[in-house]
Length: 158
Image 1 (tube, rainbow, N blue to C red):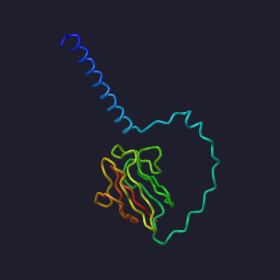
Image 2 (image 1 turned 135 degrees about the vertical axis):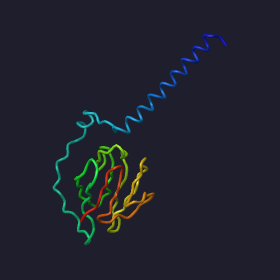
Image 3 (image 1 turned 90 degrees about the horizontal axis):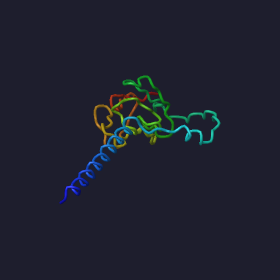
Image 4 (image 1 turned 120 degrees about the vertical axis):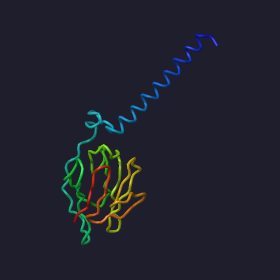
């Protein structure tokens, strides 16, 4: 091969290598900091009038009504439990946003089902724990049972 061909191959390889490095940095950045919403995207949405708070549905005796962060960076944060799933993570779309470097953007979900609450991992890197056990599918969570995501512990209370 001529020296010119060899130099072109070297430069092409170097360009492909840099594209790989930049894409890896982009993925790591989006995982650490999440995605940004531009200011124009926010203003394009029609403004909704604040709705009157609906009466919470009647709950069975002993059923949890609040999720509380009891340990971690977001300690003291309380979220009322309703009839819809509660997504836990660092992402802006999560109902329970946790500022913890070991929590994924969409880490876990708490779902109501037949008067009970179930925790489920959403494919997070570090896993979700109920009590001391790592969960691999929907797992029942009762009042006072710790749910650990990253370094954060969440408990359900009446």
